[in-house]
Length: 344
Ligand code: NAD
Ligand code: UFG
Image 1: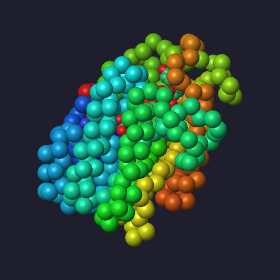
Image 2: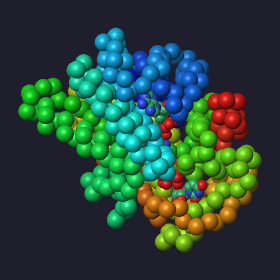
Image 3: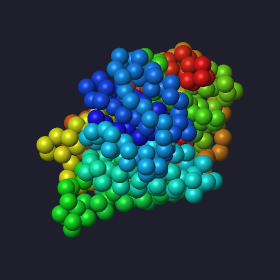
Image 4: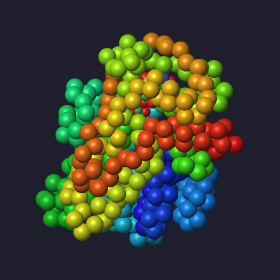
């Protein structure tokens, strides 16, 4: 059985589909602070399989202890956390509390239960302002905001565990740190997708909400970057590809070869796509207008960021297969079927 923390969220709900379709039993825990339980109802409709759901907080040590006592958990995928960069600058303590304490409580419960297979949701944000592209996993790490720092601290904290196993002669931890680039898109059924509370943080929900008329126009943050058209370049990855990457990571952890200690993997496509590339592809594929205006740069943005994905290909036998056209088509399919997200 796989424990999925933050299981009702955007990336986790897509991952639950892949796990269920591969035959795993799934137990999801979520405090529903940024998600609706409806996403998991729909996961079950899509797959025809059932999963168990616990509404709870990963920081609650008693709840976590109970989960490991009551269920035969083979591995954990830890998605639960807060993820908005801007918000993290305004409320750093909430971010450190949620992201650090959830991981600490989870890891303690896992250690006590002798379940030491963990996949952690990290982020390309741990590379800070990249000095060289594409980004490989061994490049220097840094943080430019409290959200990024929480991910970096967690990576470092988990990085201390293998040495302790050697000292204590305990069974080894096996940990995959998955550094996501920019997840977009939705399940092709259009039944689940990204459903931000209030104002979105990321480009794609701004595009879809503009296209559907919830916003008048998209603000493009700067067209004077040193990129092919002046707008920011990122490595967008279809969320279903990303979800399949988690399945591959779990399979690797549970294989006889396993992962020795802690290993980081970039999950991206390796392609750099600009904001204007994305807007144009969205309009062309979906035959819908996305009015936009160019506004000043957003503080803290880097010009370009994309991954070298060769390690994940070699060691996890995973690579992204979906193209930009699939990403914009599926994002729009989800938004147009669910104009108000899970509330519609
Ligand atoms: P999401 O907000 O949709 O999912 C996170 C889920 O965790 C939510 O359902 C929320 O209700 C839940 N949660 C938060 N704190 C919790 C707690 N203490 N106990 C139980 N549940 C809790 O976000 P997402 O985009 O699916 O991101 C999932 C993970 O991936 C996060 O850790 C995020 O930092 C990381 N990540 C996301 C992106 C991205 O662009 N979406 C990029 C890199 C990394
Ligand atoms: N952008 C716009 N207009 C918008 C929103 C975004 O022009 O309304 C641009 C940004 O300037 C950037 C690109 O679109 O060039 C992508 O921006 P996102 O906010 O979607 O994504 P970021 O790359 O800035 O941030 C993402 C995650 C963070 C993570 C970071 C690094 O949201 O959590 O990648 O991994 F920290």
